[in-house]
Length: 475
Image (cartoon, rainbow, N blue to C red):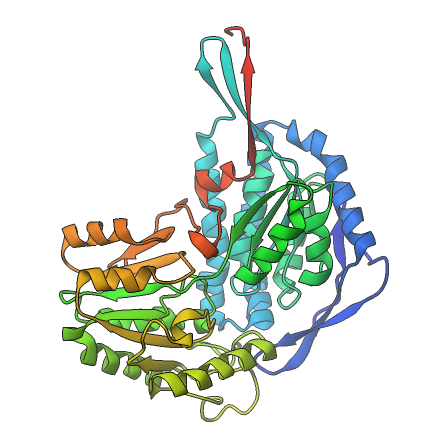
């Protein structure tokens, strides 16, 4: 079991005002792997107070000073990457290969992307010969991050806040807090001034709500469920603070008649990655009727041959889902799906040979219609729904018929069709033919998938205010 660490406030590790221990559970074993403290009002106030006190000084530091510290943070992150991989694997169940390459890699990828974007970023510009437009840090930011891609989301929030001169309080998920604590250690080692970065563990109803409503917090950046995003928006409304949200998704993967022969296979593999625990997962596979039977068979084969095992195992497999609550939710939705559609792979219960741990069978449903529960709700597990379509217009209509709008996918060799359909899809991102997004590309969604954009220049701008100044004499 890991050594207990408390909160990082004003450049030091401090104990909670009132002890409130919380057990962190290893989802592969269902056993306690660490103990953290959950914060209360006094802890939230102390962290916000430290960030507020540090803001004036940090916001006036030069771009060069902040860049140097961020480069140092990247060096430490890379040097201690194995520690981070081990922490994330233990806390949220990512197999070691995935944790090292993608979970850890996401953090370094985004940190590098912000540094590149920051090189040519200017905080002021000439609007006219006598008017200047200034970009200034918004202030104290509350960063509330999820458990499914811990470093991806912490880096996407903390680094642009640091770069733009903001100060912050991070509340990582209490389910998977170990990586956040380790990141705080990296920040401390890098030498950031006291109060710039603070961390308080807690749950959403406690510290999350306290930070969202806190009068001294100027902005909340949240990644998580749509339900929680709505609650945070309401809590923040009384103080009119800025709220940036990255929420759920129910991505459609449209496989047209001329798609690559292995498009359905690739789509199923992508759906099951990270045990299906990705907001941008392609969980609705829309397949042209001429390719439908082939796609169903291919996806079922992927599910049947996807190995499921403990996170500590080496190899290319998927691990458990993160918690008992998530496991039970997924099982209930699989059961609902079995009454709605045709089950072609997977189903209820753990995979054979696993009688402990929150392991879910990779599951595929065919003959799904878009009105079914499994096509409407974000299951957040390794569950794929396959829906047939007859025409381009029908595919677009089905894809857009969702309250979400994060990521959609298009598979076709017709370049004109690919561009035309991409323009019609109501989502913040559209991935085509398996081509991944570039470093610094804006990550975010439409509708109930949120209202913010993270990554690169777009992520930097999220943490800035715009100021117009007239009568600015020419320099």
